[in-house]
Length: 155
Image (cartoon, rainbow, N blue to C red; front, top):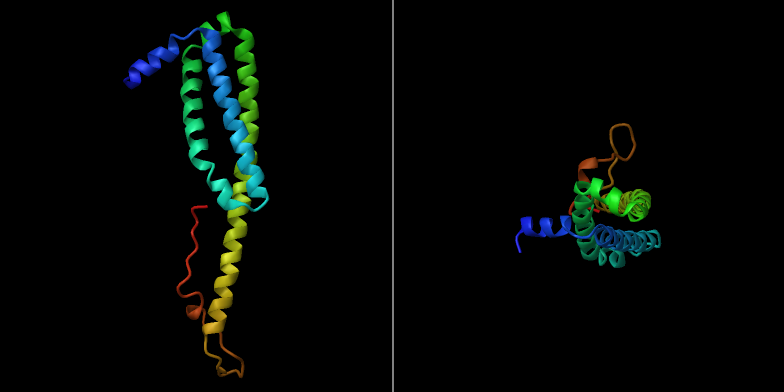
């Protein structure tokens, strides 16, 4: 089935069915994001990362339904106003969950980066030669710190 045919099939669905399918995708997306947020808060980054493929698929499904709902908004207002209203409230829940999820992801990223930076500093301090400078103090050579360590900022 071509993309145009899939769009046409969505747009020609009965209003209540389209809203219900969009709401189901939305609820599933909110649920998986909540699971991911909970795991990240608990420090279970690996477990949280296993949810990424499902989260991406659900997000793609929801976006497809949401675009169809946007295209069919006038018809849906006439034919299924209550279902459309539930969908709007669900979308607000998604926005709230996404904001919380992004905040927790940013915190996890910052904590990880701070830990790796501290480790790099300690490793760099252990590898540098201890020598006195002209002022009678041990000189610090920042070029010697953290050789061989990298920080992955993709988190």
